[in-house]
Image (cartoon, rainbow, N blue to C red; front, side, top):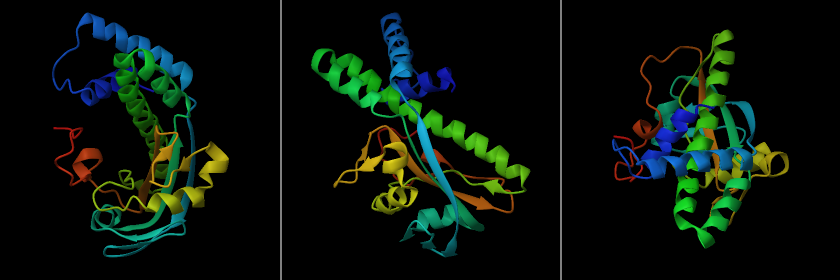
Length: 215
């Protein structure tokens, strides 16, 4: 994983914008990075399944839903790659510990572990992109439950269908929070044709008032 990308995203989550941290904060960032590298235990699981798409109606073997945003993302796709990934329980344990003894460190670890799981997913996506393109297939940007109008409730069937609890220790609370908390589920469209202009991440989400949205 790219440490520089993780640090950049961590600073964005911490609200630095284009500003630069002082020397003391830089030291704290690097200390947290080393501690998180020891604490994280990254794991993932994925399945490729056929897709039935009728405008906003989306049907797969793992879930079915109605979503204009996801339907737009998957237009022209005949199948999807559905995956779940987690950084393991280590980050949550660190955050809980430091919340009691050093809140500033807990805040940095909270932001950095979120950046780390996203970078891990980016690495997975880059590998899958290469593998599928060798077969003449092309991937769309990943799209997670909770983005735009893609219902968060779809997490239930996604995690159940992937057997994520048994295979990578990822479960869901009654309030639809993933445990461990530094985890991601997402859907990636698979198409026979390359889409030259794609929207991903913040650009694909219509929640423009999100405090973590990229400018």
